[in-house]
Length: 366
Image (cartoon, one colour):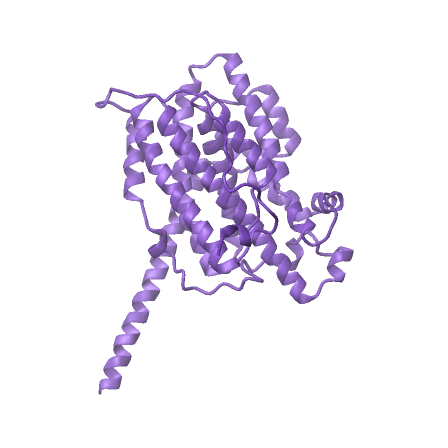
């Protein structure tokens, strides 16, 4: 079945063309590189995995409750619309929200793949090119996995959100080689990591938990890569150049914050756009969700040296300024451990099942 047939609304042309500028840069220096980036490159090679085999795709998913979402976190809960909904309608709402969330994850991963490829092309240092090449493969794997989950388990997709499209376009159209780092590694990847983590830590459904845990294991390396490369580069920039990057971050953060409302879902349930936006803004869960989503971005922005007065005021306005002191290294270590613990648990369970099967066969033979 064509993906177009699974979209809730017409996504438009199958191909989105973004005119790009900038230079492709070659480096003839093959002997030296930053030890930290080369170590990350080695880790990127060591940690490659196959989404077709590492993930247990045979696990069943209930499409009308894919994540085990409680009633009270749904935007319509407690409204006049909720009172009129049947249990099937409520299940359909859960399905749509999951399709919307994971569709944005899918579109963001494709954007990350394209941006990583742009970094390989444009960054001047060979060590950064090496690592970006491994990230491009990672992002291709993530897009493959989210696409499979949506096609096989949910049976529904949403088009790319306008604000996500806008940030991707701005990132790719900028000719400066550091902007794909800033737009993708810091903003989009940082926000995605926080969103993935919230779902990973709250869902009781094993398949989406696996998917998110394994993807986050990769994404933590990607954010570390962006931090290393930009921290080194931004030390060399003038105050005016740093202000330009801070303006980009401010605009991008507002765009990403406004993206996270799911108004498109409510519109598909017959609620006018203005009312859908108002209901979303009134949701206490959405306010908490938005704030937590910046838990990875704010400390990263501060760490790379973008912490001017206007940027700090923007984060105060968003209510996320205090997240600047979060420990990113600890968060990434936790992401790594959660994925490895999930592997250990799964493989131990499979071993127990094999032992039980062998013992049963022996008993039958006796």
